[in-house]
Length: 171
Image 1 (cartoon, rainbow, N blue to C red):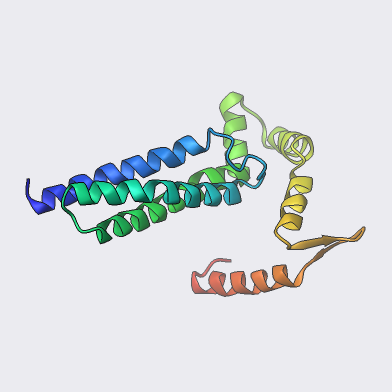
Image 2 (image 1 turned 120 degrees about the vertical axis):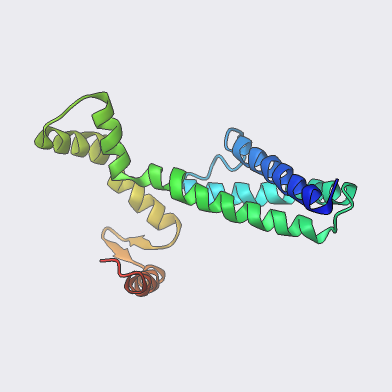
């Protein structure tokens, strides 16, 4: 087997192995107490990388590939899994659009009916505001002394997000 084919084979199998472990980990009780899906996903990804890296390294060595290649595939695997995780599950968990699409998938509504369904089911029943306040409190963005206020950490975050919005011309 040529070196190029071995390398492709190694990359593909190592990526599949680590990604499968990562996806399986979501169905196990690891970090189940973490209610913010983004943080749980990051913690699981770190855990799985630590668990899988020795196996990936040994696999590289068994194919007579340099050990450094294990670092490269693990870095690529982290990047691709993190991008996919943030782009889809995290966005879906927080997305008004996904709620509306799923609601319309079950039945048709007038605009006013959909608005009422959104307020009753998403905002009130799912306690959307309370959940977001709790999340912001956990990450240190909001303080509650009978009145919600932004922390200095949150204000700094908003300044950074304004800069990023300007760079990408987001309004």
